[in-house]
Length: 159
Image (tube, rainbow, N blue to C red; front, top):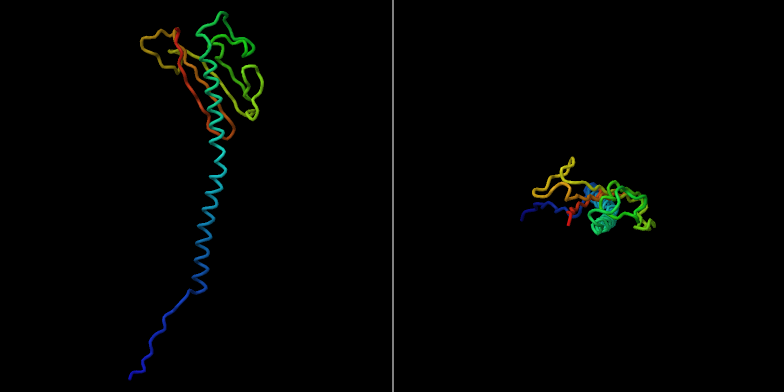
């Protein structure tokens, strides 16, 4: 009979291994919490983007419903008096208002700008087969603090 001793198998973890594992898990959780907080902060962006898009679409629709040319030249002092698409050229407003000039609640920090130009103007592509006087490009830009601006472009031709 041999009296040979077998080595004992080690069971469990040492204190150092436990501390290292806790540090690694803590760092991973800190990274996850930081990513979650960043996603939470950015979750308001889709709402702002949707509001800016709604403002741009509403303004574009308002302009497109006007006649190509109106009876009187020049830009009226009030948006309620705009009677042609050209009247909107250069329109800029900080704090969104309806056509009557009443402010829209919650959109006081938003800005809308409108440019109405014609093919052949600087930065405007020419349209083959259409005279420059018979077409207008309408660009509506909407911006809000902390969000990327939105720009809608539409074309209108003389009927």
